[in-house]
Image 1 (cartoon, helix red, strand yellow):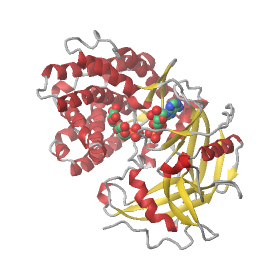
Image 2 (image 1 turned 90 degrees about the vertical axis):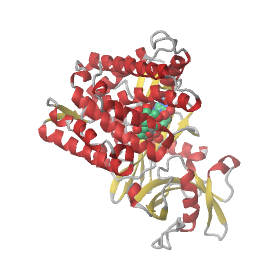
Image 3 (image 1 turned 45 degrees about the vertical axis):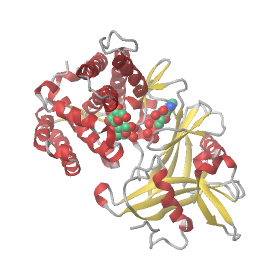
Image 4 (image 1 turned 180 degrees about the vertical axis):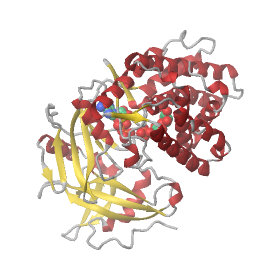
Length: 484
Ligand SMILES: Nc1ncnc2c1ncn2[C@@H]1O[C@H](COP(=O)(O)OP(=O)(O)O)[C@@H](O)[C@H]1O
Ligand SMILES: O=P(O)(O)O[C@H]1O[C@H](CO)[C@@H](O[C@H]2O[C@H](CO)[C@@H](O)[C@H](O)[C@H]2O)[C@H](O)[C@H]1O
């Protein structure tokens, strides 16, 4: 069935003439997560003009609701934020971002385009933040006590992103949250809490844009200090694994580009963030009741993954047994955590590591993303990421080689073990608690993450799914239990 604009779109809907163009444009946007799903319709649920009368271009902020024909791949309807530039003839450098044309009040046509592509619009947003301005329902707020960045145009960040960011002259970075959700976005909330705690493990928050959805506050965007001259942990780890697989006769500690020193530092950084989050936002005991709630969420998501992926369904009962390890574990504590940690969420700066993107797993509801959880979830997610780094290279190598080499698989496993262990050592040094001392809890969280990843990869990057499937099998064997 072809996608149509919603029949209940109000004639006064300012985007009414643009629905079909938007429906054609959305699937080509990296941040639009529902690429494979059949779209049933679109309606505008929020709209405001942000530019002042007479300002060129006209800038609009909109929230659209996209509904899907098939609800089994996720929610039946998802809401997204748009910043739109509107001008009869916009400059040539935003041509690539054009969405479509819309009739204007004079009876002519305007071009409507993705506003973040236009340096004039990103400059306007930055100056409104520094002025603590209000435009319609949008409030632009500078973070108290921070130095105002020099106002200038931003350049859109090109790369793999769930949201959309613009960078201001290597000084600041603004992220527009694409998924529109009523409530305070945890990325903003936790950056604010950590910044006020004096954290050196996150980039300082410089400001935010706040709006409204369903009569509640909503986070539109977040501005923070830009760490220039930084590299992300995933790229660095990939370079290290590449060196190892090229020198298959050597051990991970013998080749150039050994990553264990960095893995140890990342462990210390994650531990410091956990201590700071606990100090800023408190802790609560992980008692029998809390553990049984966590077990119930894990089992629920296991069943969702099993319904979608046969490889998970086959192992469902064995996985469930491991997940029940959460209730068998010693009492510990719950607190706010990162929630979706991986090597790509760590930036190596000349002075240390920064943790970014505290939004939590993108497919979870806001209520689930802000729920206190065990810090073990983050630790387990990092351990998974070391596995990913090692085995992603191997699976690529295997796909291109005629004759798979078992020696390389052993080497990749050595790389993962060495770095997982260095990470845990670093974590234990700072918190005084070694994650490996709670092996059943750690294993349950690692397996829960692997199950999530199998579903994530099936929906987003099917050629990667063998990586978490391989780990899932390893975590179900007795040999996969030991961390040391
Ligand atoms: N403070 C920062 N300094 C430098 N680069 C950053 C900073 N924050 C984010 N980035 C870059 O932007 C990318 C996307 O940021 P992220 O917060 O992960 O966005 P998303 O939620 O869209 O995935 C990161 O991978 C990193 O390259
Ligand atoms: O970065 P996001 O918050 O959008 O997180 C999602 O995408 C991640 C991939 O970009 C995904 O992470 C998985 O792949 C990583 C390698 O690309 C690997 O390091 C992680 O360990 C693995 O989980 C993440 O799960 C997903 O929520």
